[in-house]
Image (cartoon, rainbow, N blue to C red; front, side, top):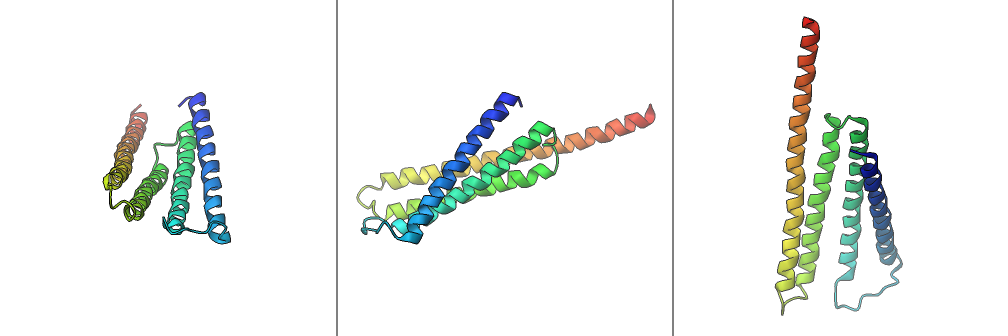
Length: 163
């Protein structure tokens, strides 16, 4: 991975982290201060709680991706240590999908005349779960690469003994 790609990815991760902390702080402040009274048209308090929890999943994934990029730069990504970061990313994506389904359910209460929006939102939730499955497949590829790396190291050690 080149320095430019690493720098660009880290810049994006910093923006994502800063933005998510900003949104999360705004949601928590509104919940704690009670400065935005609900008019009853939407259940805003549950949506704010779900948004805050969603930001936690985004933050967890961003931190783990940062750690994985660091491992790539050091050449240590093909190790068992990388699995815990990938597992957290998968968990964060699944959590985000479940939170999205909760938002969809809350939104469905007000969409009785037009269920199309709820169906589309449900489709977005399924797509988010699809991303988790893609990352799971990539985890399996990482596992294969780690196994092959260990086998190659063992073969190299045996070859060194023979020579």
